Image (cartoon, rainbow, N blue to C red; front, top):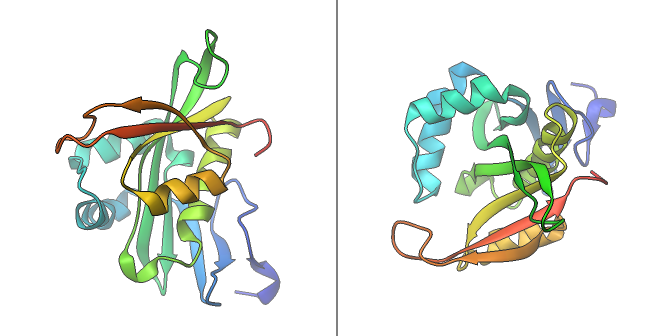
Length: 184
């Protein structure tokens, strides 16, 4: 890995990309591969209360492979972002149908947080949803109590567009946050 190949912020749409984290360590962004499945499922179960069966991850990989992103640190997968693209009513342009990117799940192991991994996966995932799958906007659901995630999404120009009462299994409400993809 040449120093000239290391970026501060993701620039690529696909393939392996080396990013310098906030602490100087270098992490890799790349597309999910089926051999990552057990690790990604393990990360999901370890860091999020919303867990999905293995087939759900495989289904998203098969349908939207360029928008399923993982991050490696020190040679092991430490984070993932699973996305899909849907057609429905816009959260941005009310009353208009749109192709919407949907951030289904994003997780980073605790020991790999605060390096910029989630931020960079979000940028790369949003670009993939736009350029490979034609998304015009992107949205996600987030627990109203998840202040670190809400702050990350606001930093990425997401706005709170709706509230879903009792969205999560434990009864907690969710914000729907969305942003257009015209300048990503």
